[in-house]
Length: 248
Ligand SMILES: Nc1ncnc2c1ncn2[C@@H]1O[C@H](COP(=O)(O)OP(=O)(O)OP(=O)(O)O)[C@@H](O)[C@H]1O
Ligand SMILES: [Mg+2]
Image (cartoon, rainbow, N blue to C red):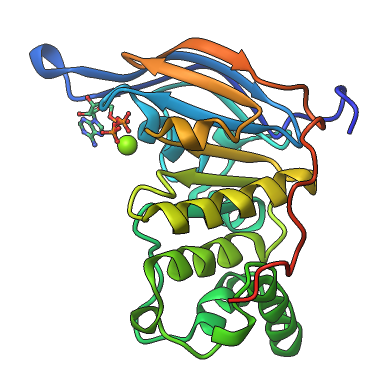
C-alpha cells in the first residue's frame, strides 16, 4: 500500500448548510480531508459538531452544499442519484448504532442482501454470506433473526453485512453506542482485525476507548476539523486478531 495510491477519501472545501437567514446552520463549515487506503480513522467531537453530517456525505447518502468529494477517485458530484446508489452499494459498507437489520429475516438473508442488490448469483451470495458470518464468529447463528440475537451479535451481523461486498470503505456511526462493554470489545476486536487486513475504516464515536483503537483521530468542532492526530503510521497496527478465533 504505497502512499501514491488513489486515496479512498479526498474531500476539499466541504460545506453543508441547513435552513436560511436567522435559522441557518453551518453543520459542516469547510472540511478538507484525505484518507488513504488502509487507514483507520476515528471522528470525535461534541454533539452537534457535524460528525453525522460528514458521514452522510462520505457515505453518498447526502449531497453537500459545496465542496468536492472523490470517493476512490470518483467525483461523486458528477454522478446521477442512481449512479450514487450504485457506488454506495459497491464501495461502502455501513455500520450504524442501532444495527438497522431487517426484522424477522435470518442473519444469513440480512448479510446476503447487499450482494443481491449487486446482482451476485444466489449460490455465490450464500457462500460469501456464510464466510462473512463465520469471520464475525456467528457461524452457529445463520438462521437466527435479529430478535433471537443479542445486541452484540446483531452488531456483528451488521458488520458481516458491511464487509460481505468487499467495500473499499467501512463507515461506522457510533457502532458501540448501544452495546455493553463485552460486546463493545468484540466489535473493536473485529475492527482491529479488519484494519490489520488492510481495510479502510472511518468510525464516528463519543468513546475514548473506541478512538484508542484507531490509527488516526480527528476532532470536530462547529463543523470543522480542529485536530488531526496520527496515533501510528498506516500499516503499523500489529495483527492482534485472527479470523475464526471466537467460538460463540
Ligand atoms: N437535516 C437537518 N436540518 C437542519 N439542521 C440539521 C440537519 N441535520 C443536522 N443539522 C444540524 O447540524 C448540526 C450538526 O449535526 P450532526 O448530526 O452532524 O452532529 P453530530 O456531531 O453527529 O452530533 P451527535 O454527536 O449528537 O450525533 C447540528 O447543529 C444539527 O442540529
Ligand atoms: Mg451524530
